[in-house]
Image (cartoon, rainbow, N blue to C red):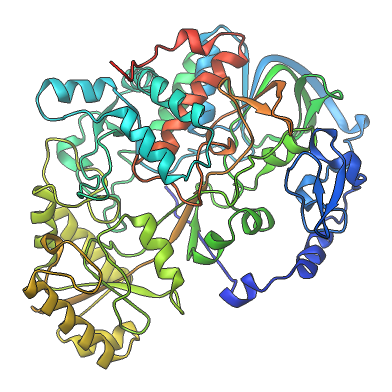
Length: 605
């Protein structure tokens, strides 16, 4: 799997100081080559625009952009594609746009309904996949571990309530409850498909197990059958070198094979350019560009499964300004293909984005050094937070410093302390626990030591025999840094973190050389805001009415996350919703009834 990072070039002042006038200029400049409609014609759902507080706003309450027409550049439809540019037409039952995890699940589900399905993707042929974790509630894998006495299932009603609380209510709650009811059966469906392709799945035990902040054992990882003992308990951090044997990098290619075996077809280098809709009627297909020219694919239903929009700088900075500043890099596979194409095309024919803004983001410390729960210091060499939190929180908090640089600090005994904490069930989570540790297994210290060596060789982690020397390698003031470590050691001896309230049982002194400083890097993986949707996975218009024939799943769908951050209470929920709502979208788009076909989990039994 190829790693690609796109560095953010915005300074904090430059980004947050961008005024409406400058933004308007940028928006207008981005319209070159387009023929914008009037504001009244362009407003989603046919609504007119009015003036509110000096800013154009849609009468239906949808946000209006900063340009001179009251619209963002991505909201203004280009001119229709001339008919003489369309070189061919063809018919299908279901057109799926996007060949990632959600698109594969939609394709397979529609094929099972007996539909003719064409799946397209603008990228060249490769695995459109990234990540490891897939969440599901009450799956076969979980049930087997419960039977063995290795797992106690969580109260899923409580899980959803905490999830809603995390989002501060800025979600469409019925979608969350639908996920809770349907995700287990949908994961089991995927599990059966994957097993037939030579894969197996484990349940992740590296999740966070703190008394105040707690994650849940609902997270699954697919891997090549027979590889568990040899490699799968190694971590996914840089230096592990085993990303080709587990996770979505092996799952999605297996789903490609399953699609082919079921009579489906994936067409690569085929990009949707316009959705086809006559007025307020149903969506009846899409005009797509191929290496041979423009083709109109007529379809009874279209499923949008095209991912997010983070590579479109204008959309990204509007919908997630804090994330745009806080991130150190973006990671997507393939790189920079997440340009919000289908968000835009849905808006052009009347679809609407979710109301809740800013949009949530998946932003973790994935490609810096592993952070663990150690002492964290900022650019001044000073401690700045309680480190006993999830990786999402760490990614944001470090950006609130005057400068974004931050480090995790430990000594020769640090990794041994992590193993003791993990095996005792005291901590965990991404960048602390190991990404592939199975329920029933132990923390693999040998693997983590290999990871550390890889980080040192790559320059992500610095090491020295004195704190003063380490401060020099980090580029922080040595006097501040030494004082910070001494203070932290005093608090460890005291057994009370008087400064930040960290649990003493997860504090480890920094006293024995060699000393280590791991660079913390906040990496954006996915933007989670998207198109309005309902329980049948339709795309909705600005009046919350379903657009007939148009469905959405995965990261292109909205209303599922809120309050700016991805809910790490449920690790893998992003991929989990790709599976659950991908399958539902495929069934419904093919004319079936997903609600009737997919069994419900009795949450209140």
